[in-house]
Image (cartoon, rainbow, N blue to C red; front, top):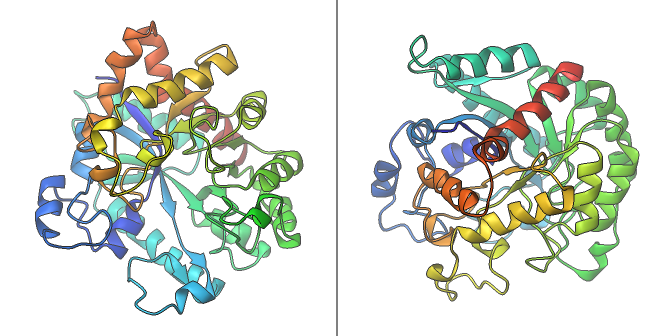
Length: 369
């Protein structure tokens, strides 16, 4: 089986906000949530044992908390919300998520990767099954929305904590940029002054800038301003599925031109045009649609060097919003025969499954890790 690098998994958020024991099998997590009605409950697709069976050798694991006072004070706020009263609270929540990864590392279940030497050693441990039958899962810490950085001057502090990648915003505005627009006015809103300062602080650290979730204006200003590595951890193609959450061909080409990689997502609304949660039948979303997005990126690039996987599984949804062939993360390998049927070689599939992220990470972590 080909090892996989998945560029976007909200492991700590699921563990702490959903109270999920990720050391259990997916089936056990589902049984524990039986009868719960919140989105994704009883439909989990990710756990550490399932990741091992899928041969997820490395993942970008998120720190996720937003500063949204109005949302945080809303009535009947679910405890799984990512919205908090201010950046101080967002900082504290993200530090708690960091502590979760550190605890999993202490138990030998994950390995937080800080630099290219650690990446190389970790990858070697996964390549030698006889010598290392049970290696930990590699974790690259990535912040989804930069609100937990309470001030741009905290960039070095977070880097010392292990942060190696981040996006400036999530959905809507953050302290630093405008994320995927929720209103027409946000479509042309770009970086804030603090966002421009944060990029200056991140540049000497060579932190990887994730352009996922950026509004179109934020995307282009950040790409213009930031000299370090850029990528999209979990983004699909707007050409195939309309909507500002997806990347335009121009944006994809900009990432390609910067030697970046785009991880394709397995969430139904980003695969099926006009998807309506609770209305559109899951059977209308085959896994071949994921291959369509991978293929579109490869065609734009003229090579397989820039397409990869950023599944976003259990990112606020569960199996009910996955392609019909995906019951858990162990089913990611079903992409391989689909790619083969379209003329992709074993070498191409290995590049898409892990090789492209491995090269991107090695290059980025060598310079700044």
